[in-house]
Length: 380
Ligand SMILES: [Zn+2]
Ligand SMILES: [Zn+2]
Image (cartoon, rainbow, N blue to C red; front, side):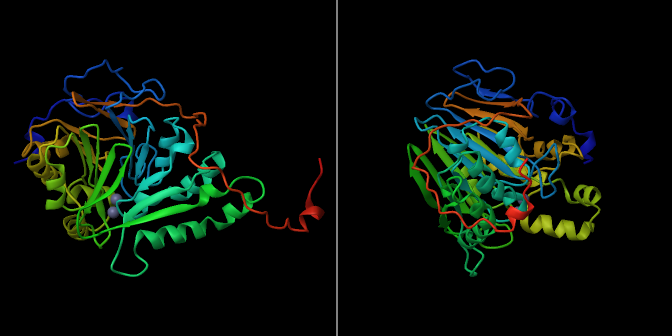
């Protein structure tokens, strides 16, 4: 069957073409208990007590672009603490996070699906940049362990903090440096585990199949609702089992091999082998959605440049439920009554928002100021 002959539902224009709605023909599933504005604006909507809000901070692939940052999602929950959870932080995602005008002090929990650059590229900015912006609490990082020494998330964070050493030292004596501290949780790479239970939020990890041991997917439960985030993976049974009946399943999806080869200029045979070994293509995503049957399904990590019509046609061969193609700043509101998806409209030059810290800030003694500075300084 030629994909182009299959009728696909009409979807709105993409955001970088001026579109203001999420890429779906089903923006509302269920019966919302309150009215939602047509677009989401930061600061304009408090979360309900039983609500989860999921914002895609990076919808793209290893080649970050202005319209598509590399992989990252943010989950906010309506508990009294208003906890925030970052899942991955690829290059460009931090600027999208900043545009949501959330308190920098609250950005202190990061769950990594794996350690590819397109899922970790903005972490230095989260440590060093946000420490200067006012986050004095340490960051907790969760990620995969490994059977190979040096490949677990513990070693990754240790080296990351090493890379931040000059940055941290430059603040000593001037500003708190406790924002450069981290607590690391290494998670099992070969079996599901409950890894987080605080303030009415539960998070589970389960293995992803993505090249090496240590790649994970996650499920977050709060207020009777849930979100499943695949990270990068080829189709696998752990994900289908964890996602069965979930409210929102965000699953990775690459364009088909021939399209990726054309778009990237790389060898089609190599691309086909790589995608088959470690990723998921639209025809497979449709089958995963059909097996899991979430309330709402979403494609993520998809290069939007070649278009999405053929992608959706492949998905539709297997699945007729609500499907969203995520873009940067696609926002899902999840309640027991409904799942609603919109695009956010944000300020490109947002102010820095502040909230309370959990712990008293810690400072460190300054290093000596280089003596030769005095000879070079112009006192003007
Ligand atoms: Zn990857
Ligand atoms: Zn990736």
